[in-house]
Amino acid sequence: MSSNPSTVANRIHFIGIGGIGMSALARFFLHEGKRVSGSDRAPSLITDALAREGATIFTTQVAGNISSDIELVVYTEAMSPEQEEMVAARALGVPMVNYFEALGAVANDYYLIAVAGAHGKTTTTGMTVDILEAAGLDPTAIVGSLRSKTGSNFRAGKSKYAVVEACEYKRDFLHLQPDVLVITNIDYEHVDYYRDLADVQSAFRALAEKVPAEGYVIANVTDPNVAPVVTGLACRVVDYREYLDLMLPLRQPGLHNRQNAAAACAAAAMVGVGAEVCSAALAAFAGTWRRFEYKGEVAGAPVYDDYAHHPREVAAAISGARELYPDKKLLVVFQSHTFSRTHELFADFVSALAGADQVVMLPIYAAREKNMSGVTAEKLVAAVNEKGITAEFLPTLEAVTGRVRGLVSPNHVVVVMGAGEVTKVATQLFENN
Image (tube, rainbow, N blue to C red; front, top):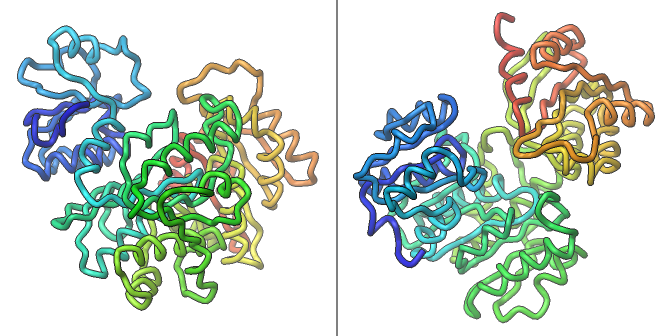
């Protein structure tokens, strides 16, 4: 993409506008005064909000959504090239870019703080935005979730600073040119694309090498998965452990969130934010949607909703729940996300889920995949049971919701986990209750 779409195009259409990143970028363009439309498979809270903010929303994805006055199409990378709107846009000669190309074209005009990592990106991004906001630096921000503070995944700033979440899937973050790069951690993830951990590390290394000599890479330099990525860079490498405060009164539990806070504080320090401002902003940080998000109580049991879909994230969420509720029984509702991840990390999932007292599991959420390995949720349940943890499989959201209602008491804490439709359980538990 040779030029910035925010200055070239005035009429922009998003295919998959309800996605968390896509909707944030749509909000950016709306704020810029562009005419924005978009389609998604079904209405949602996000598409409803975009409509109120001025976007034209289509709840069917058909060729007729593409009109001749559209100057740019932005599409989610999950979209098939043969999707009707994609075909129609090509036929009309409308320029098309994927979300990450468009994000780079927009974000690279700023002094850019990019937050990357296998886990913790969203929380760290949100924390960094709050710190810069508290410091009066007025950043523009695109976050991979809804900030609890504002209910939005976008912040319109007027300064030179931007903070964005940088996703490693398919090396998409290489469209970014960060001045400050945060690497929260590195793990073997997106197993449908990356061959192994070394392949993942090569992508992060390529991103780190894009940081200019006068820029900064923020990382835990002693992490064995991270050290090879940050060794020998031309820019300054800052160890975020120097900013770790184990006594800071965070609202989010777990050591992983203290590490996220340290990374955010380190990034802010690189643009001149003082420690007192940083600590105060972090202590007030209200979190983001589906990152250990408190939903309420059912039968006296607190219920949390969490996006955890990798074994390390599952283990971290369980550890956080244990920290908050050391005397309660932990009931985890889990839906594994993608067959490839479940198959490749099967043993790690079993070990992580064994940290709960009881597990109720839904069928694997296929997302973009077909089941080539034969892995199933039933097999995962059986393996967890072999660890001495009570686990059971139920085929539908309704069955899981009913089962959880029958199990919980004030002696329980419930954590709903996964990147698929399992989040609906955290809502259904409170319906007609």
